[in-house]
Length: 239
Image (cartoon, rainbow, N blue to C red; front, side, top):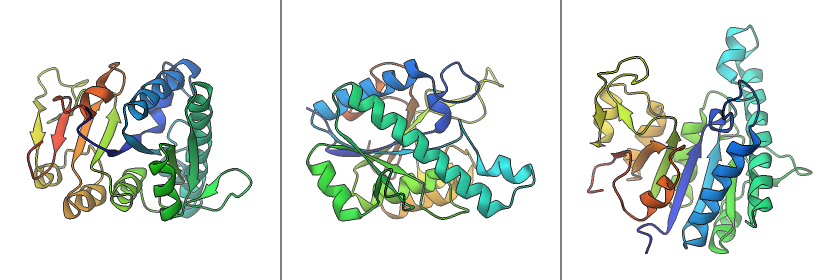
């Protein structure tokens, strides 16, 4: 029996790369879709926020000389492309998914309307929230915390390439220490950078716990929703 009824999954755009340097790896996105469908079939309602870093990163575009607002808008469009690709992968495996965008692209996907999103979730449809918050200067991490709070999710699950939060980069430091549990204040004060500070503060202020886990370890998503200790738990109460 799953421990959680409704969760928000945060996927980075880079999660779709697989072994590629750019774009979307078909095998990787199908594998991710398979785990999400298994989650929903277990009775868990799932919203997803997806980034666009595999296609465009607003921050990188700004460094290249593009206006910050325009760069962020391009990044938002990249998230829509990724959301449509994930929707297709989910549909190919029998899942029902809806893409809801924070910016209006009526011919491509639905606008984000909160009550409609909740209705989709109640019908066991996977809701993919695209275009971040719809505003420049905000990351998709902040969008994930915002959507998680809005849909009354019980848990925000942050998918990464490592198996939790460390005190330093484990790829650079073989002696990096992994945390099993942290409070929001520790993540913010230690500047652990797993999510931006705005996202963490929003989760803290709205009592939305976060679990950071390794996306590429098959079965981790189901283990999390079943209450097993996977990755790093961030929250003020008991995990």
